[in-house]
Image 1 (tube, rainbow, N blue to C red):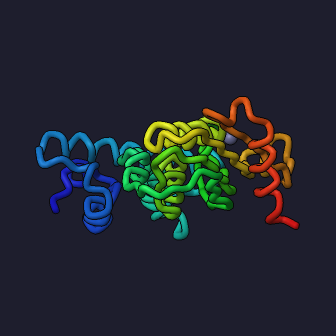
Image 2 (cartoon, protein in one colour):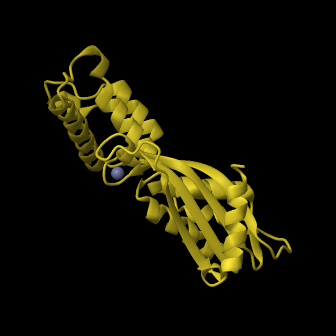
Length: 228
Ligand SMILES: [Zn+2]
């Protein structure tokens, strides 16, 4: 693959091999049209340049051995952390089964990793999803894909929780949906107030869960059981 950016510049931003890796793993960055491709390559080189400057600002030398490939690695990592932007996660729920089940379906401890949109620092934890179906039931594994699709974006925990609940509501049309997310935020653990063990809990209640405290209590007691 030709590398017009590198040809134009004295300092080599990215090797042809690195560009090849990017174009294979993240084809959406590279359009068929030469004009678009050049624009994307320019964007990529600006990003890696900026990471170099960030390294300098933090007080290290971007040219030393261990850091030379870091801008490329950071770019690749960010593209992986944000793969959720390229899908509609609710699509995973669309394969449904017609099973007669009127009670709660609970999927708990769905692990996720996300990036806080305020600091680009990780937040991670578990999501617990409950719904009381009307007619449609989805496969249990689909909930993991749903959570991952929304987690792999620049996020805040509150929005992540709501998006999961709303997707279930929209696609499965259940009697009610309840989602609880428990997460640790590295931006709280490692900087500022430094509360290492703080877990933030958020919840979203839809449908029947909005006015049935007994059903909420059932859900909360079931997700609490795991730790005892
Ligand atoms: Zn943050």
